[in-house]
Amino acid sequence: MRKFTSAFFLGIVPLAANGPVSARPHDHSPASARCSAPLELEMSGPRPALTITIADGRQFPAIFDTGAMNTSVNIDFAERLGLVNEGPLAPPYDKHSTGYQTSLKGARIGTLELPTRSVPVMPLPLPDKAAVLSPAAFSGQLVRLDLSKGTLQVCSKQALSLPAERAFAYTAKPFELPSIPLSIGDQVLQAHFDTGSPYEIILPLRFAKSIELIEPLQKAGTVRMHSGERPFYAARIKGRVRAGSITLENPKVGFSDLVPWPNVGMGLLRRLVVTIDPENKRSWIELPFAESDSRHGAK
Image (cartoon, rainbow, N blue to C red):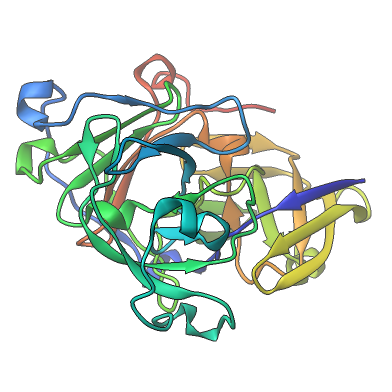
């Protein structure tokens, strides 16, 4: 039986309540986008990984997680990172009994410097990672994540750098995160676009009662989050499911009562390009150019 680990909160709101935002056409050339050089992500694992270099030159492993509201640091690495306890955890992390706030200073990924921000230091469900890097670290800029190539760029917020696709607002509070349209039968919903999840689609367990399934639920393992550990079930949905521009026929999806809202993870997102505007809480989702002529995805 497999054990699945997800460190991050998930969310969903109806499409009508959190609908698309119009965007202007753009020129994809690097000059117009004013982007940093592409940073290579390590894509061999279940999540996009990168290396954070601190001021003294030491390097530590991290992941880039669009399903994280803020950058956070693993308390097991805090002493090695030389972090200073600057006070108790701030909301929404103040419910955790162990941890504190600190300022992550002088850190960078590749040649890209990370802005100094107050971040929570606490236990993370990924013990081999020093940190979880959120798109919110680059608030005020655009974050372009090409998961088909495994690259990350940070771009200036110029009108010409906005993708031509329609923008989708973040999901609603309390967990405002990038979203992706998810259609299941006649339901059209917004799910979290979550690079911190290794799965294709996970649905709250209650959805198993309202969605037509081809087969009974089968226990497939466990899901572990900050709030605990719960059984993980799997079954095939009858019919077509569409996540953004990717269409699946009779897909096998996960179900868990630990997941409060639908979630689309790296099992599907590896085919996509997303541009995120953390400050204005919106994102654009694209297929790579090579796939743009074929809108019907894996079966």
